[in-house]
Length: 304
Image 1 (cartoon, rainbow, N blue to C red):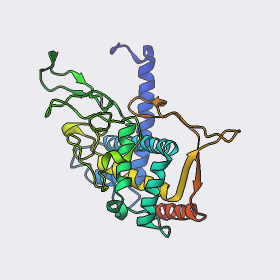
Image 2: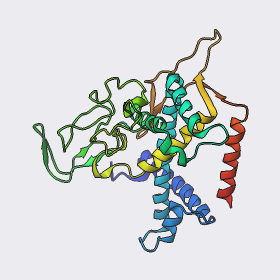
Image 3: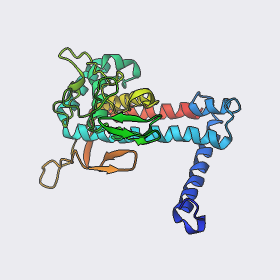
Image 4: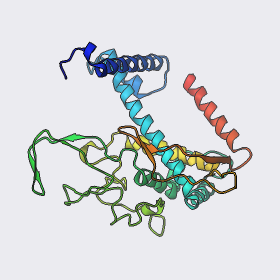
């Protein structure tokens, strides 16, 4: 099938058309990146294009791939967050109390608040652990022949580490998973307390490279964008909880419509919750106005 001509292989024609459209989109993004003065991955790649012997198309695809990987996964994780807040109001209120005590109501949360918000940091970890957006991670390929529990794994074999359930580990003969009963006995429940002790100090779970979970992968090839993702989730979740309450939508009889915590949409690499109704209301009269003012201010700086 690899050698079939394009006119006989509809999937090849479709793939080439997708490639053309994506190339056009990524190259358009790169053209816009050259018009700004702010530092960015795109600007850095453009300035070092000759050094790394990258063509304009390769540069655009490198930046575009990084953008797509971060955008899809972060959006899916925020969907998980909204689902958790809808189903677990006690966790939402506890996080809001912490934010209010540190931030107050006169300004929005900032990254400077992060070190003073242990429960919210734990909530970021729990969102990624409870419903990982990439439960199967990315495939790996063995670099040499190996044996595992009597199974021969030839060099070049594609291996998938199932972070959702499988338990095995090179260093300790087992691998942490997001549903490891030794650390998460009630693993199917959303509880940021999984990552905190009785004094709200962060618990270090061994074998997770300081993340507390394995959603970002294992070993040397963990997700290179995990720190950016953690920061993005923190500031988005902090701002949403500072500004709004998330509650179940009610039916005609006034009963809450509770979404399923298990129903999901498998989009290939990313798995996200099925679309669900919820009600979002401002916590104070001026909360949304302050958020919009911050958004427009940021957009203005990006356009300069």
